[in-house]
Length: 267
Image 1 (tube, rainbow, N blue to C red):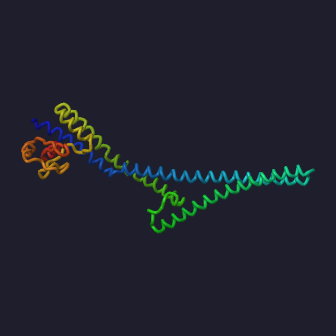
Image 2 (image 1 turned 45 degrees about the vertical axis):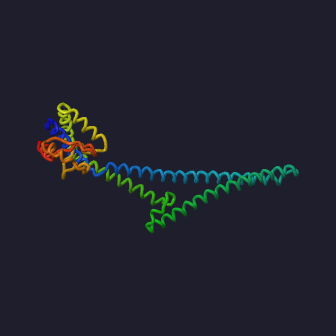
């Protein structure tokens, strides 16, 4: 086995480790930002839905009020005409028209009461939610119970948190941009060398990295694979010590002597 080829792939793993360490400084910020933005979208939809319902209620209330006023005006006109009716037939016809308009008013008033009932129920639910918040019983609060002002404050707080997280992430990216760029160039160059000298090792490396394995090449630690802690057979130790590698039967990683990583670091 050409152990120099193993050194090439270990060097590539070392460079990949360095860039992963830098990216780890982001402390999961991208994922936190995504989660917060999902919360913002959900909260914004809640607020918009309540605003839409309130606007619809106001529009319907105004239309019903106009209907009632119009009906009352017509009733007054019909009653005035009744005083001038020339016979019972004209009087009865006007009475039917008055009766129809009165039914229209009654129907409109029922619809107004329905709106009032819905708004009262929403207010009561929010008051209950406010009481539960005061008692720190957040797990008992559903979407309808969250008071409007609290929901709006949550929305504003979420936006501030996202901005803070984005600023923190941007700061890390700016501070490490030069180092990351330098490492990316080194990784590109190292991959080219490995492709030229050990294409099969590179294919194995890339295959492992494309799965759930973060480190395709790991150290032999306490006679075991440091990737999954599975013990390496004794008859493979000599090969590893001599600069070769062992494919872990459990996780598939390439296990090498720690000396190779030290040499890669000093290369």
